[in-house]
Amino acid sequence: MALIYISIGSNIERELHISAAYLELSALFGKIRCSAVYESEAVGFDGDAFYNLVAQANTDLSVAECIAAFKAIEQKYGRPAKSPKFCGKRLDLDLLTYDQLVCKAPVELPRDEITKNAFVLLPLSELAPEQTHPLTGQSYQQMWQNYQVPQKLWQVAFNWPDAAPATGV
Image (cartoon, rainbow, N blue to C red; front, top):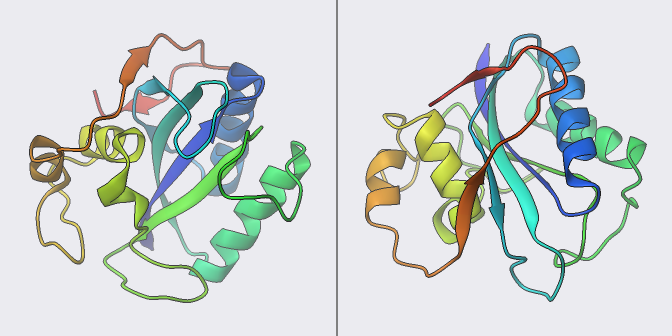
């Protein structure tokens, strides 16, 4: 079983799509843990604010199978198969880590966004403070404490679609 972390984001019908992602990932992986939900300004383009969080799961799926499953979920909720990186999104699911695997294909792992975006690093550090980044060797908590990029980010109350998931809080 691999331990994986998944970034979840939406800036179109945010509550609907975050709830849908939670239910879909729970159906796919069984019990998942989630960070708190954070709201952040769009990064890289002018657009509505995003809701972001990180989920933790265990899986027997391969990296490629995880990516395919995430793409299928995104498309189910209206995301085009080909969309620009910096644009509004109904649902965005990104595999951040897969155990301590470092690779470039079928996707870059660990995901570069971990070190660049507060909306990824803060919820990851909350959910897995003692886990270490496969390249930096630092814990996610240490990485967040040393994070210097100015990005506006704030925690929001979220109404989960069923009993609240286990959180890292």
